[in-house]
Image 1 (cartoon, rainbow, N blue to C red):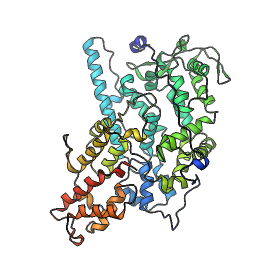
Image 2 (cartoon, helix red, strand yellow; image 1 turned 180 degrees about the horizontal axis):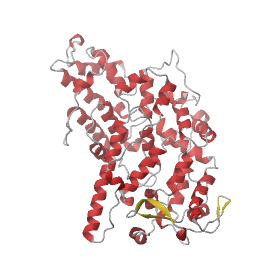
Image 3 (cartoon, helix red, strand yellow; image 1 turned 135 degrees about the vertical axis):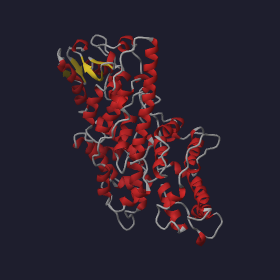
Image 4 (cartoon, rainbow, N blue to C red; image 1 turned 90 degrees about the horizontal axis):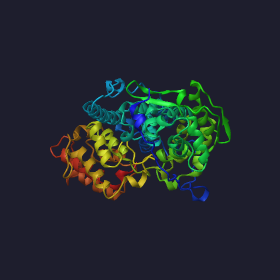
Length: 514
């Protein structure tokens, strides 16, 4: 059944400016000459808490102290396999995800329906954040966030929270699976069909929005296809329909499909008049994936996500090596991510502590590392202030990231939000229950040894060792002017001193790095 939404929708021009990527660095331009060969601990570069924390900071949304201690009981290879192990189903944010509403017939019913959708959308965001906070020693949720940022849809366009939940689950199911299979599923994902006008892409009047972004943003990048290829791909993808008042899954209707033959990237795709027409989109993806640009394009994105998030400083030699691993493994994500996280390049000193925390990493990481979760909706409200509004990227190309995360507007909020976890208040803003800082401090070994306690806290919260001068300054904050031998975590002033120390740490510029 054709929906009222589909009948009334006007095709949109999503974006016309092509995404131009900075050139990658090769040869002498590279920041470091280390390669993709596996990193092996040595006396000069041991497998220690510093490197274990580095691996966990990148693979998860920041580690707890328990995570770091667990990592030291494993080899790097064993830890990476632990992080990539299959996990049980993540559940769902509520029964509403499968509840189909009756079709509104009055203005009041339509308003109530829209209001309920907005409420459920908030529920979905809060649930997703809680998943990120609670995930235990796994890369899965980090990869769900990666796909969420890469294969974008906007809630303000999609409007149906069930569509977006199913897309989020799709990313989770394919998080470390086959990239080609994922893209075939995205072709008829309900949220994507609604967002990029796939549901009004019909034979005789094709809509090119999704076909363009399938190639430019999701698989290949600009320069590997022609405008005619976009037109032909759009014809192949006609026929998918949505009606959220009967099902949250898309259906294929041959009556809306262009059954003529198509010439896509030099290959003939034979048109079908039956339900088999739904497989023409799969053929489009298979042909796209014959181009080596696909592996290079997605490996560049993985490099930005896990090694260094400066788009102008991507190591081309490493990306080429990753792309070879990717193609050799039939576009399975797990082998290429494992190769990257195991590599000499990943553990190279130049790449440790080199990435700017995204709002998600900052806020989710605070909840994880400080053991204080104020709730997914509270965290997401802060993330939105910091300009990462989940399910609502600023453009179809997603978020720019890197230094755009930190501005004269967002940096004061970053510090204030972090301080609120510690003190319960932020200047001129709302409060939350402060962390139990003494109980938190007692998780560290030798917590009544001020020097040992400080070193453990700095290792957990900062990505690189600090200078002796800074360390001494932090120590004096912890001691509150008392001699080091008088430190006692159960003393009356210990609570205030610990809070002062943490406030100073989260205000430090390097706290914004990981």
